[in-house]
Amino acid sequence: MTVGSSMSSGYCSLDEDLEDCFFTAKTSFFRSPQSKIPAKNVTKTVEEEKPEPPTIQEIKQKIEKYNAKVTNCLLMKLNDDGTYTGFIKVHLKLRRPVTVPAGIRPQSIYDALKEVNLADMTDKRTSFYLPLDAIKQLHISSTTTVSEVIQGLLKKFMVVDNPQKFALFKEMRKDGQVLFQKLPLTEYPLYLRLLAGPDTDVLSFVLKENETGEVEWDAFSIPELQNFLMILDKEEKDKIQQVQRKYEKFKQRLQQTLKEAGGKPG
Image 1: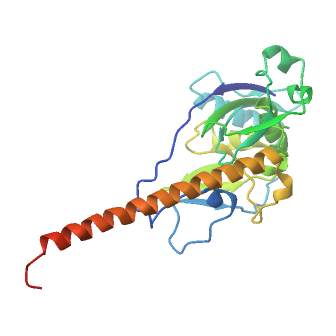
Image 2: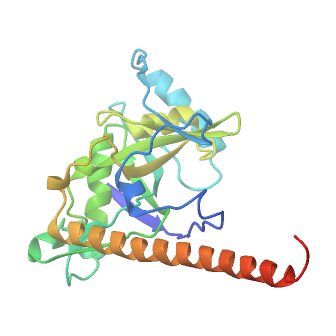
C-alpha cells in the first residue's frame, strides 16, 4: 500500500442559542439519544446480500468503463491474475484525540520503503487531535480489505491506538441526505470504488470512531484519559461562563426595564 496526501482542516462553530445547542466532550464519547426529528446525516449499518463474484471479463469491462470517466491519472489497472489496483481517498473525521509516540520525527520515504515502524523506537506516548477532515489517498489492491486500510492509515500517522477503535464508513448522498454505512472489516473498498465510479460525490470513504454504544474505558491509554479530563474541565468552565453571561445580560435588561418604568403607574 502506498500513500499520498492532501490535507484540509476546518472548525465547526456553534452560534445558536445556549439552551438549544451545546457540544461537549461527553457528546463525543457517548451516543446521543435518538431524536424524533429526522437527522440530516444518518448512520446506518445495513446487511446486504453479496452477488456472485464477477468474472475477469466483467472486471475488465468495468475497469475500462471506470477509466473512461477518470479526469486525472488515478486509473485502475487489471493484472494477469484477475486482481487489479487503483486509488481510493479516505476522509479522516475523528472527534477524539489519537495516541502517538512522543518525540518521533515524521516518517520518511526511506522508512516507508524499508517498512520501519517508528512507533517501536520509544515507549513514550502523547495524544493529539488529527486535523479535522484530513484526506489521505491510498493506492491499494482489489484484495485489500477494510481492516488493512484502517491499519495502513494508522501506521501512516504513527497512531498506536487499537485499530478496533476505528471503523471505515462509506458515505453516500441520497434525496438531499448524507448517509453513512459502516463497512465490514472483510469488505474490499476498491471493488466498491469500481462499482460506484470515480465520482466521490456518489461514494466516498470516511474513517471515524467505532461507535459501539458503551465506551470501553480500559481500551484507552493513560494520556488519552488525561486528555479527556482536560477537555471536560475546559468545557465545564466554558459552560459556566456562558450561563453567567446569559443571566448577566438578562439581569441588565431587567434593571433597564425597571428603570424606564420607574414612577409610571403600573
